[in-house]
Length: 84
Image (cartoon, rainbow, N blue to C red; front, side, top):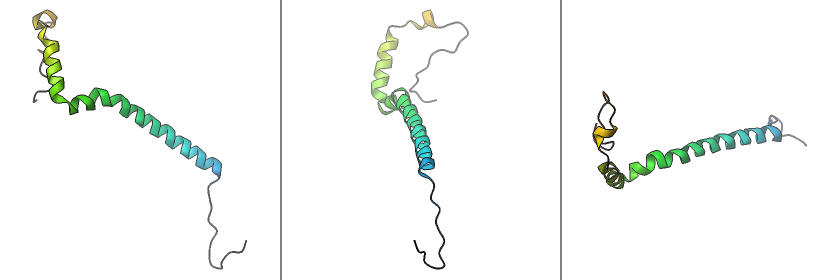
């Protein structure tokens, strides 16, 4: 193959090296996706539905007598959705 005078040859990574970096990127991307999928129902879902979660929390806490479950010398429960 003839080259144009004054040009240089471009080195291309072997196919094995490309597949190794692709595999690493897919593993890393899958790990990040797994973490995102785990955090969605724990953090983001309640954050986007504050009113529904407040109602459920009020219903759940209505049947609990706080003095019966509160250990001595610990801070009293507070509203997790309230202002700090």
